[in-house]
Length: 85
Image (cartoon, rainbow, N blue to C red; front, side, top):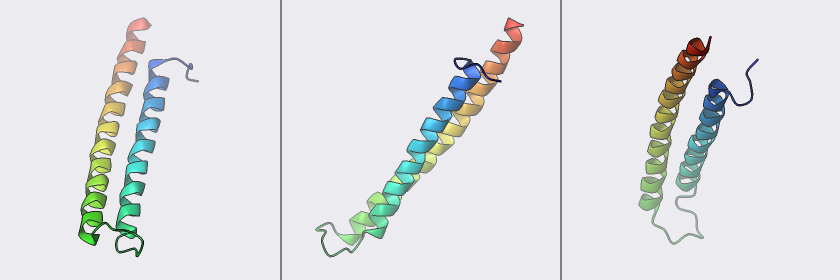
């Protein structure tokens, strides 16, 4: 069982929160793309597509960063636990 304030627990919580942010960015990008051409917007369709794709690319980059950071934090926590034993 993980202790509430252990480094592994903090790594998991941080990765979960970052993952939620990445998913939110994907959702925002999809909303922009799906809303392209709506009759109540003054934004050009091509600009909706550009911003939507940029948000999705940013989410993919942030997701990659999240995965790499989580693996790094998990490895550091394992080393720290081995040193404490």
